[in-house]
Image: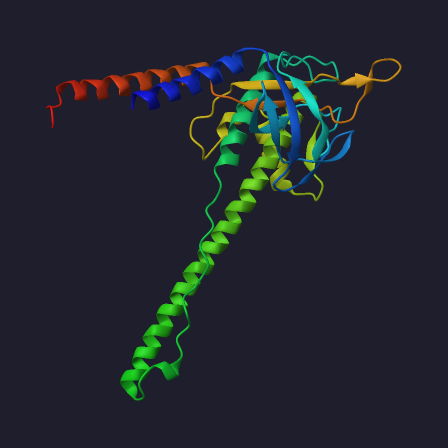
Length: 292
């Protein structure tokens, strides 16, 4: 247990150190689970789900979910060659078009990124395949007793099939809801940081309302179903964002992203918890009788 405890503390300490110190991050590849298009007012249609990145940070590979905070540049979903160089040394203070963001906007982005991460991690569980075999009358004895037994087996089969169908429908609805809310979170982040209206391309009024709710001043009323939502985040920005003759031409593959991270107090509580668990185990060992 001592080795396990030191390993866990090492992981926690390393994460805290890497989150607090400057790092160079190379994005190796970007992908999306499912795409939903939205319209950003004045800019056109874009894909809204969060991006899943494979990346390297300080020489170590890791995967993360990135929430775009930049509507003025774009990034492609592919295996990047060469890898895209990013840093985590900048603060989220403007909308990348130069307009300042106030503390309330930054807080909203943090809450939304963490809420979205919780939604992303909360994957519905698909029901297993329906494998029950439908009974056939010829498998039962002739006569009324055999008919009654067959009818009972058929009723049980139909009930099991109906239950499986209901479970499958519930799973599909949960998957659809999850993707809708993930896209609404990304849309709300864009609406907050750019002050541009974000709407569905297909006139989905319920989706548009959710984006407005998640970007409102009382957005915490709508961060539901996932428990406590933190607001700590890490901003990563591309090393090369502008180029051209005047140095201000937006370059491709240069969007900026936020990553949800635990707040420092969360890690402190975890460290204290590991320490207390280790002390309790040592205490139990100290009082344990010797054995041969």
